[in-house]
Length: 116
Image (cartoon, rainbow, N blue to C red; front, side, top):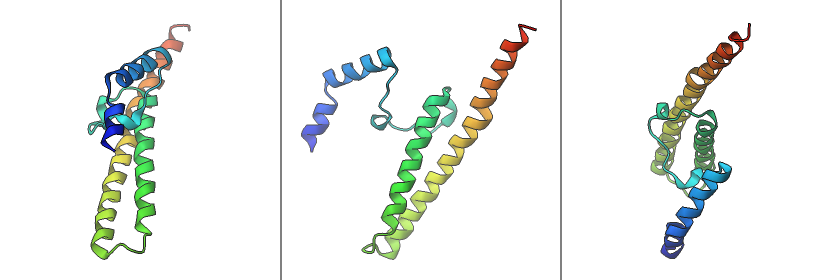
């Protein structure tokens, strides 16, 4: 397993990812740590990617809850993790709708206003 991690973190792989991001705009969000402060992200596309990652994690943890081999304490731990993820999902939703979309709509109004 550590061999695969070493390959993924090699200088060549890092360089190729940087080139792909610069040339095509592709960014592999699964390799980055999700930001704790959602207000640092100013792009709607990037915010949606992070929000989708939270949704995927919630789905995975809900699937784990249905495992019959889990005891009560493990279920409670998973439930707490899901609750934390839902709080984070709400933060992303609030940030996208109230900060990024409003900023984008204000920019459109200003842009259209110049032509009248």
